[in-house]
Length: 247
Image 1: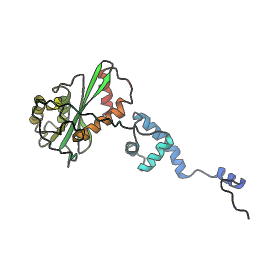
Image 2 (image 1 turned 60 degrees about the vertical axis):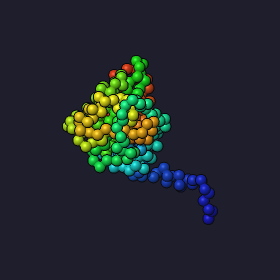
Image 3 (image 1 turned 30 degrees about the horizontal axis):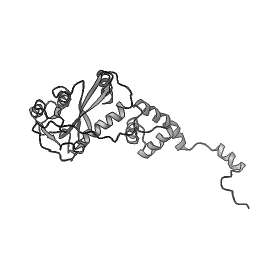
Image 4 (image 1 turned 90 degrees about the horizontal axis):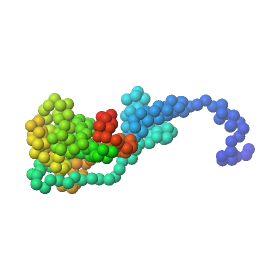
């Protein structure tokens, strides 16, 4: 009896192969691959394995993370990659700054214990749009945000703070609100509002993005998933409407 030659398919083997029914895995792939491609396209075409896995689970598909990654490869989709650029804010040297109550420990035992804030900017045809976010450290959820054409403390970050406070029933007793040394976050009108709500203001060190790393990461995610994916921006209102959909 001759030994089989590697890579050679006999006529009997060929007939058996073409007559073989599809496996359960292949049938499931045929069903799920178009669904993964559709969900990916409906969510800006940016979701990676982790977010796609959570999304498919919410859609009722009982699949794991590794299976999600394999289905994404079959569908020809992938998550968007974040930029590695890091920006720091110039402080107002004439302002007395709150102390650092966080010390890079971005953890919380419950919601409304620690919020981090930061501002980013988006170039439009009519100038810059400035975007402020307030993120709850416990849930990693955006609890407040605002888009404005100016960086004024009483408009951009305060409206984002007031949105978050309104969702928290108006009182923030015992909460720590952490931000960088940007003058719009250290202005007296803004810090007075924090104290009025019952929260405690906190800031990191000067010129150190790591002391507000979670808020910076949220800005990076926003820029990666929305701003750089959607191309040219016409107006501040255009950015605001798109930001609403993204949040």
